[in-house]
Length: 359
Image (cartoon, rainbow, N blue to C red; front, side, top):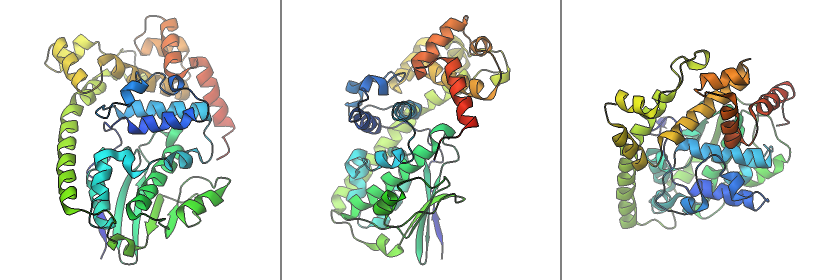
Protein backbone atom coordinates (compact mmCIF):
# COMPACT_ATOMS: atom_id res chain seq x y z
CA UNK A 1 0.00 0.00 0.00
CA UNK A 2 1.31 3.42 -0.98
CA UNK A 3 0.75 6.44 1.22
CA UNK A 4 1.45 9.95 -0.03
CA UNK A 5 2.01 12.70 2.48
CA UNK A 6 2.08 16.27 1.22
CA UNK A 7 3.04 19.32 3.27
CA UNK A 8 0.34 21.83 4.17
CA UNK A 9 2.07 24.41 1.99
CA UNK A 10 2.74 24.14 -1.73
CA UNK A 11 4.92 27.19 -2.29
CA UNK A 12 8.10 28.68 -0.81
CA UNK A 13 6.59 32.14 -0.29
CA UNK A 14 6.17 31.91 3.48
CA UNK A 15 7.89 33.99 6.19
CA UNK A 16 10.81 32.48 8.02
CA UNK A 17 13.26 33.23 10.79
CA UNK A 18 16.65 34.82 10.18
CA UNK A 19 18.84 31.80 11.04
CA UNK A 20 19.17 30.62 7.44
CA UNK A 21 20.20 34.04 6.16
CA UNK A 22 22.65 34.37 9.07
CA UNK A 23 24.14 30.97 8.22
CA UNK A 24 24.76 32.02 4.61
CA UNK A 25 26.27 35.33 5.72
CA UNK A 26 28.68 33.37 7.95
CA UNK A 27 29.50 30.95 5.14
CA UNK A 28 30.33 33.83 2.79
CA UNK A 29 32.37 35.66 5.45
CA UNK A 30 34.66 32.62 5.74
CA UNK A 31 35.35 33.09 2.03
CA UNK A 32 36.16 36.78 2.30
CA UNK A 33 32.74 38.27 1.52
CA UNK A 34 31.57 40.92 3.98
CA UNK A 35 28.16 40.91 5.64
CA UNK A 36 27.46 44.22 3.96
CA UNK A 37 27.82 42.65 0.52
CA UNK A 38 25.69 39.68 1.49
CA UNK A 39 22.89 41.82 2.90
CA UNK A 40 22.93 44.42 0.16
CA UNK A 41 19.44 45.38 -0.97
CA UNK A 42 17.71 43.43 1.81
CA UNK A 43 17.27 46.05 4.50
CA UNK A 44 18.74 43.54 6.97
CA UNK A 45 21.66 43.94 9.34
CA UNK A 46 23.67 41.37 11.27
CA UNK A 47 22.00 42.64 14.43
CA UNK A 48 18.59 41.97 12.92
CA UNK A 49 19.54 38.43 11.99
CA UNK A 50 20.86 37.80 15.51
CA UNK A 51 17.37 38.43 16.91
CA UNK A 52 15.80 34.98 17.55
CA UNK A 53 12.32 36.47 17.11
CA UNK A 54 12.97 38.18 13.79
CA UNK A 55 10.72 37.20 10.88
CA UNK A 56 11.74 37.90 7.30
CA UNK A 57 9.91 37.58 4.02
CA UNK A 58 10.97 34.68 1.80
CA UNK A 59 11.90 37.14 -0.94
CA UNK A 60 14.39 38.73 1.44
CA UNK A 61 16.14 35.40 2.02
CA UNK A 62 16.03 34.89 -1.74
CA UNK A 63 17.88 38.21 -2.14
CA UNK A 64 20.55 36.97 0.31
CA UNK A 65 20.85 33.77 -1.75
CA UNK A 66 21.27 35.75 -4.96
CA UNK A 67 23.94 37.86 -3.29
CA UNK A 68 25.74 34.69 -2.20
CA UNK A 69 25.66 33.21 -5.70
CA UNK A 70 26.78 36.52 -7.18
CA UNK A 71 29.68 36.92 -4.77
CA UNK A 72 30.94 33.33 -4.80
CA UNK A 73 29.90 32.29 -8.29
CA UNK A 74 27.34 29.61 -9.03
CA UNK A 75 29.82 26.76 -8.57
CA UNK A 76 28.61 23.27 -9.47
CA UNK A 77 28.41 22.18 -5.81
CA UNK A 78 27.99 25.49 -3.98
CA UNK A 79 24.49 24.50 -2.83
CA UNK A 80 25.82 21.23 -1.41
CA UNK A 81 28.55 23.05 0.53
CA UNK A 82 26.01 25.43 2.04
CA UNK A 83 23.45 22.67 2.70
CA UNK A 84 25.93 20.75 4.84
CA UNK A 85 25.97 23.69 7.28
CA UNK A 86 22.31 23.26 8.22
CA UNK A 87 22.06 21.31 11.44
CA UNK A 88 19.02 20.37 13.48
CA UNK A 89 19.75 23.26 15.85
CA UNK A 90 19.54 25.75 12.96
CA UNK A 91 15.78 25.20 12.90
CA UNK A 92 15.00 26.27 16.47
CA UNK A 93 11.80 24.91 18.00
CA UNK A 94 10.99 23.13 14.72
CA UNK A 95 14.25 21.21 15.02
CA UNK A 96 13.72 20.40 18.70
CA UNK A 97 10.28 19.00 17.89
CA UNK A 98 11.83 16.70 15.29
CA UNK A 99 14.58 15.58 17.68
CA UNK A 100 12.12 14.69 20.44
CA UNK A 101 9.79 12.73 18.10
CA UNK A 102 9.40 9.01 18.90
CA UNK A 103 10.67 7.70 15.54
CA UNK A 104 12.23 8.99 12.34
CA UNK A 105 8.97 8.39 10.47
CA UNK A 106 7.02 10.51 12.94
CA UNK A 107 9.67 13.23 12.78
CA UNK A 108 9.32 13.32 8.98
CA UNK A 109 5.52 13.45 9.21
CA UNK A 110 5.79 16.34 11.66
CA UNK A 111 8.30 18.17 9.46
CA UNK A 112 5.99 17.95 6.45
CA UNK A 113 3.04 19.17 8.49
CA UNK A 114 4.95 22.19 9.77
CA UNK A 115 7.21 22.75 6.76
CA UNK A 116 6.60 26.50 6.87
CA UNK A 117 8.76 26.60 10.00
CA UNK A 118 11.73 25.49 7.91
CA UNK A 119 13.82 27.48 5.43
CA UNK A 120 13.21 25.36 2.35
CA UNK A 121 12.37 26.73 -1.08
CA UNK A 122 11.97 23.28 -2.65
CA UNK A 123 8.81 21.48 -1.49
CA UNK A 124 9.14 17.77 -0.62
CA UNK A 125 6.29 15.32 -1.07
CA UNK A 126 6.77 11.96 0.65
CA UNK A 127 5.64 8.60 -0.62
CA UNK A 128 5.64 5.71 1.83
CA UNK A 129 5.43 2.34 0.09
CA UNK A 130 6.62 -1.23 0.64
CA UNK A 131 10.32 -1.46 -0.07
CA UNK A 132 11.02 2.24 -0.37
CA UNK A 133 10.41 5.68 1.10
CA UNK A 134 10.73 8.38 -1.56
CA UNK A 135 10.81 12.15 -1.13
CA UNK A 136 10.26 13.97 -4.39
CA UNK A 137 11.58 17.51 -4.11
CA UNK A 138 9.57 19.98 -6.19
CA UNK A 139 11.44 22.95 -7.63
CA UNK A 140 8.99 24.05 -10.32
CA UNK A 141 8.23 27.37 -8.61
CA UNK A 142 11.79 28.15 -7.57
CA UNK A 143 13.33 31.04 -9.59
CA UNK A 144 15.43 29.61 -12.41
CA UNK A 145 18.55 31.65 -11.66
CA UNK A 146 19.02 29.99 -8.25
CA UNK A 147 17.17 26.72 -8.84
CA UNK A 148 20.16 24.40 -8.99
CA UNK A 149 21.70 26.02 -5.92
CA UNK A 150 18.48 25.66 -3.92
CA UNK A 151 17.82 22.06 -4.98
CA UNK A 152 21.32 21.15 -3.81
CA UNK A 153 21.07 23.20 -0.63
CA UNK A 154 17.64 21.96 0.39
CA UNK A 155 18.19 18.27 -0.42
CA UNK A 156 21.54 18.29 1.40
CA UNK A 157 20.03 20.10 4.39
CA UNK A 158 17.19 17.56 4.54
CA UNK A 159 19.70 14.71 4.46
CA UNK A 160 21.80 16.39 7.16
CA UNK A 161 18.72 16.63 9.36
CA UNK A 162 18.11 12.88 8.94
CA UNK A 163 21.69 12.21 10.04
CA UNK A 164 21.35 14.54 13.03
CA UNK A 165 18.07 12.93 14.08
CA UNK A 166 19.49 9.41 14.09
CA UNK A 167 22.91 10.46 15.36
CA UNK A 168 24.69 8.70 12.52
CA UNK A 169 25.27 8.82 8.79
CA UNK A 170 22.17 7.92 6.81
CA UNK A 171 22.87 6.23 3.47
CA UNK A 172 20.30 6.87 0.78
CA UNK A 173 18.97 4.08 -1.42
CA UNK A 174 18.99 6.42 -4.40
CA UNK A 175 19.23 10.09 -5.29
CA UNK A 176 18.22 11.69 -8.58
CA UNK A 177 18.62 15.24 -9.88
CA UNK A 178 17.35 17.01 -12.97
CA UNK A 179 20.58 18.95 -13.57
CA UNK A 180 23.73 17.78 -15.34
CA UNK A 181 26.39 15.78 -13.51
CA UNK A 182 28.82 18.14 -11.78
CA UNK A 183 32.54 17.55 -11.34
CA UNK A 184 33.72 16.12 -8.01
CA UNK A 185 30.68 13.86 -7.91
CA UNK A 186 32.63 11.75 -5.42
CA UNK A 187 31.72 14.32 -2.77
CA UNK A 188 28.03 13.62 -3.29
CA UNK A 189 28.63 9.88 -2.99
CA UNK A 190 30.53 10.50 0.24
CA UNK A 191 27.67 12.57 1.66
CA UNK A 192 24.63 10.60 0.49
CA UNK A 193 26.17 7.12 0.53
CA UNK A 194 25.10 6.51 -3.06
CA UNK A 195 26.15 7.81 -6.47
CA UNK A 196 23.32 10.11 -7.65
CA UNK A 197 21.84 9.91 -11.12
CA UNK A 198 21.66 13.14 -13.10
CA UNK A 199 19.53 14.67 -15.85
CA UNK A 200 16.54 12.78 -14.48
CA UNK A 201 12.88 13.89 -14.79
CA UNK A 202 12.62 14.79 -11.09
CA UNK A 203 14.67 15.64 -8.03
CA UNK A 204 14.23 12.98 -5.37
CA UNK A 205 15.93 10.88 -2.75
CA UNK A 206 14.93 7.54 -1.26
CA UNK A 207 15.50 5.77 2.06
CA UNK A 208 15.20 2.20 3.17
CA UNK A 209 11.74 2.22 4.83
CA UNK A 210 13.12 0.36 7.86
CA UNK A 211 14.88 3.63 8.77
CA UNK A 212 11.47 5.19 9.44
CA UNK A 213 10.85 2.76 12.29
CA UNK A 214 14.06 3.70 14.08
CA UNK A 215 13.48 5.26 17.51
CA UNK A 216 15.26 8.57 17.88
CA UNK A 217 18.05 8.75 20.49
CA UNK A 218 16.64 11.90 22.11
CA UNK A 219 12.94 11.03 21.90
CA UNK A 220 10.96 12.42 24.81
CA UNK A 221 7.18 12.33 24.89
CA UNK A 222 6.65 15.34 27.18
CA UNK A 223 9.21 17.48 25.33
CA UNK A 224 7.64 16.49 22.02
CA UNK A 225 4.17 17.52 23.23
CA UNK A 226 5.52 20.87 24.43
CA UNK A 227 7.34 21.50 21.14
CA UNK A 228 4.26 20.57 19.11
CA UNK A 229 2.19 23.11 21.04
CA UNK A 230 4.80 25.82 20.49
CA UNK A 231 5.03 25.02 16.77
CA UNK A 232 1.26 25.19 16.38
CA UNK A 233 1.25 28.57 18.10
CA UNK A 234 4.14 29.87 15.99
CA UNK A 235 2.48 28.79 12.73
CA UNK A 236 -0.78 30.41 13.81
CA UNK A 237 0.97 33.70 14.59
CA UNK A 238 2.95 33.69 11.35
CA UNK A 239 -0.10 32.97 9.22
CA UNK A 240 -1.95 35.79 10.90
CA UNK A 241 0.86 38.17 9.96
CA UNK A 242 1.47 37.18 6.35
CA UNK A 243 -1.81 37.95 4.65
CA UNK A 244 -1.34 41.70 4.45
CA UNK A 245 2.11 41.50 2.84
CA UNK A 246 0.78 39.15 0.16
CA UNK A 247 -2.21 41.39 -0.50
CA UNK A 248 -0.06 44.50 -0.82
CA UNK A 249 2.47 42.75 -3.05
CA UNK A 250 -0.33 41.61 -5.35
CA UNK A 251 -1.57 45.18 -5.72
CA UNK A 252 1.90 46.52 -6.44
CA UNK A 253 2.31 44.51 -9.63
CA UNK A 254 1.74 46.97 -12.50
CA UNK A 255 -1.79 46.54 -13.75
CA UNK A 256 -0.68 46.27 -17.35
CA UNK A 257 1.96 43.66 -16.62
CA UNK A 258 5.37 43.97 -18.25
CA UNK A 259 3.71 45.04 -21.49
CA UNK A 260 1.67 47.82 -19.91
CA UNK A 261 2.48 51.31 -18.78
CA UNK A 262 0.45 51.48 -15.55
CA UNK A 263 2.85 52.15 -12.67
CA UNK A 264 2.51 50.39 -9.31
CA UNK A 265 -0.02 51.90 -6.94
CA UNK A 266 1.13 54.33 -4.27
CA UNK A 267 0.64 53.45 -0.63
CA UNK A 268 -2.46 55.67 -0.31
CA UNK A 269 -4.12 53.91 -3.27
CA UNK A 270 -3.19 50.48 -1.89
CA UNK A 271 -4.67 51.40 1.48
CA UNK A 272 -7.92 52.57 -0.15
CA UNK A 273 -8.10 49.36 -2.16
CA UNK A 274 -7.76 47.41 1.09
CA UNK A 275 -10.41 49.55 2.79
CA UNK A 276 -8.13 50.95 5.45
CA UNK A 277 -6.26 54.14 6.22
CA UNK A 278 -2.66 54.61 5.16
CA UNK A 279 -1.66 54.75 8.82
CA UNK A 280 -3.39 51.44 9.54
CA UNK A 281 -1.73 49.82 6.53
CA UNK A 282 1.69 50.99 7.69
CA UNK A 283 1.00 49.57 11.15
CA UNK A 284 -0.08 46.18 9.74
CA UNK A 285 2.97 45.98 7.51
CA UNK A 286 5.25 46.89 10.40
CA UNK A 287 3.68 44.08 12.47
CA UNK A 288 4.38 41.71 9.56
CA UNK A 289 8.05 42.69 9.63
CA UNK A 290 8.03 44.58 6.34
CA UNK A 291 7.05 47.90 4.79
CA UNK A 292 5.45 49.37 1.70
CA UNK A 293 8.88 50.47 0.45
CA UNK A 294 10.41 47.00 0.93
CA UNK A 295 7.51 45.31 -0.88
CA UNK A 296 7.62 47.86 -3.70
CA UNK A 297 11.36 47.23 -4.11
CA UNK A 298 10.76 43.46 -4.24
CA UNK A 299 8.14 43.82 -6.97
CA UNK A 300 10.14 46.37 -8.96
CA UNK A 301 13.31 44.31 -8.82
CA UNK A 302 11.54 41.12 -9.96
CA UNK A 303 9.81 42.93 -12.82
CA UNK A 304 12.97 44.79 -13.81
CA UNK A 305 14.98 41.59 -14.03
CA UNK A 306 12.20 39.95 -16.06
CA UNK A 307 11.94 42.85 -18.52
CA UNK A 308 15.71 43.21 -18.92
CA UNK A 309 16.04 39.48 -19.58
CA UNK A 310 12.95 38.71 -21.65
CA UNK A 311 12.12 41.91 -23.57
CA UNK A 312 13.97 44.33 -25.87
CA UNK A 313 12.73 47.35 -23.90
CA UNK A 314 15.26 50.12 -23.36
CA UNK A 315 16.36 50.98 -19.83
CA UNK A 316 14.27 54.16 -20.05
CA UNK A 317 11.18 52.19 -21.05
CA UNK A 318 11.71 49.74 -18.20
CA UNK A 319 11.98 52.68 -15.80
CA UNK A 320 8.70 54.14 -17.09
CA UNK A 321 6.87 50.84 -16.71
CA UNK A 322 8.06 50.58 -13.13
CA UNK A 323 6.80 54.03 -12.26
CA UNK A 324 10.09 55.97 -12.20
CA UNK A 325 10.03 59.55 -13.41
CA UNK A 326 13.62 59.35 -14.63
CA UNK A 327 15.83 56.53 -15.86
CA UNK A 328 18.66 57.72 -13.60
CA UNK A 329 16.52 57.06 -10.50
CA UNK A 330 15.77 53.55 -11.70
CA UNK A 331 19.43 52.88 -12.49
CA UNK A 332 20.42 54.01 -8.99
CA UNK A 333 17.78 51.74 -7.43
CA UNK A 334 18.79 48.78 -9.61
CA UNK A 335 22.44 49.18 -8.58
CA UNK A 336 21.32 49.21 -4.94
CA UNK A 337 19.42 45.93 -5.48
CA UNK A 338 21.96 44.05 -7.59
CA UNK A 339 25.28 45.94 -7.37
CA UNK A 340 25.28 46.33 -11.15
CA UNK A 341 23.62 48.54 -13.76
CA UNK A 342 20.58 47.47 -15.80
CA UNK A 343 22.67 47.46 -18.99
CA UNK A 344 25.41 45.34 -17.44
CA UNK A 345 22.81 42.97 -15.99
CA UNK A 346 21.17 42.53 -19.42
CA UNK A 347 24.55 41.98 -21.08
CA UNK A 348 25.57 39.35 -18.52
CA UNK A 349 22.27 37.49 -18.84
CA UNK A 350 22.56 37.51 -22.64
CA UNK A 351 26.12 36.14 -22.48
CA UNK A 352 25.01 33.35 -20.15
CA UNK A 353 22.17 32.44 -22.50
CA UNK A 354 24.61 32.13 -25.40
CA UNK A 355 27.31 30.32 -23.45
CA UNK A 356 25.75 28.39 -20.54
CA UNK A 357 27.92 28.00 -17.45
CA UNK A 358 29.41 24.59 -16.84
CA UNK A 359 27.06 22.76 -14.54
